Image (cartoon, rainbow, N blue to C red; front, side, top):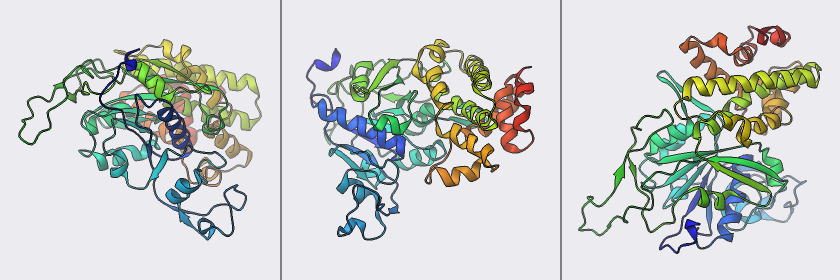
Length: 416
């Protein structure tokens, strides 16, 4: 494998985000950087949105005589001193080489690999804050489950990140309930990454004060539309191990977290985004007491609409087999429609006769559902494209959330 060759520099890794999934991914990454000192710097930075929290009296970390347990304390200090994210991932021991950092700019400084794991409504603002403050040849992996809908069309968050920061970014998604992954229960996931063709082949830029910028290699690459991207990439210098499929598998694969690496960024990203909308419908069906047959019907229609969406809007690069063969496709759909937060909150909204937003407030400990926002954004895009009626399940979820359709209408509406 390519990374067995000695290189002058090691990759520094930063995880941007510290919710339950962000912390679980940071745990995996830190375990692997410590295990692979020839490739990675040991210490991993995790950017944490600073807030004051109290260590619960039920926590193993609670000690009434400890200063950390004297009322609300900074979350970063609690994480760094107890090696536990007591608010978003309680009960999980974190590696000692994982460092919570309240400064976004400081956490990404000099990092060659940036792992983005935030609610998708915050990603653009976050990227704008670090624009021009990261290594120009850094590479990213997006763990964000959503799509970026704008007036001029729809794009993947991996490419939104890439455009804002001027870097290449892949995606990670799969059948991954954060708490189960953090507890090291066996699961699998998919990484999509199409290595830029000049990475680790270009000479390292000369950074002496008297040098010009002529030795900095920039090049174009194709985006998921199959067209040349507007972003001109700066090549990863040859002094670093190539960020290729082998290195990414080394960074994310654990005995309890199995990784498959493919090149289909569109398929992996869309699977992670659209399955959350389907999971809301599955939760409603469960809440109605309609049984497993009905839930299977919703999942079948949902999978077909996911494939159709990919073919219609990302047909130049998507491999539709990703939806049926990768964890990021059908496996993630099954998990999300069985035990994910979108499913659970939708189910409770029926049982409690409450709006799903009210359930979200009481059940998610300050975190947000991705499925509800994705449903609204996707419907806006489909409506603008004039194809809303071609996606009856995605449309039904949107209309039920908006209050113009009832859950009872789902069976008749999606059979058309």
